[in-house]
Length: 75
Image 1: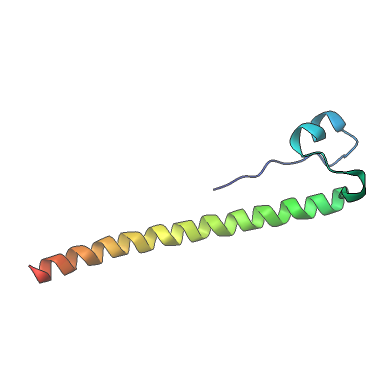
Image 2: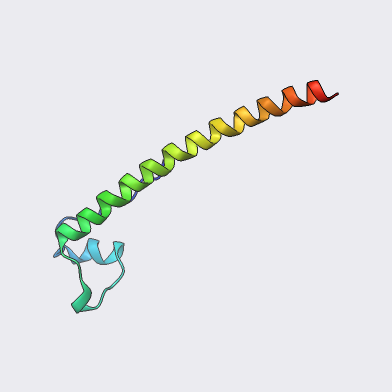
């Protein structure tokens, strides 16, 4: 599972904040609420990707199982 870093909620904590995020021009800076929403959305996407990865793994195992049956019958 992918875990994204938690950004400080206080944008004035420049020491921590500047080391974790890219420097943005003044006119395009996001406020703390927007950054938190982006982090929440990214975490939700990471969870969904992790779930899909598990589904793909199960399908791969099933495919291997079916291939072994096919080889038995085709021999």
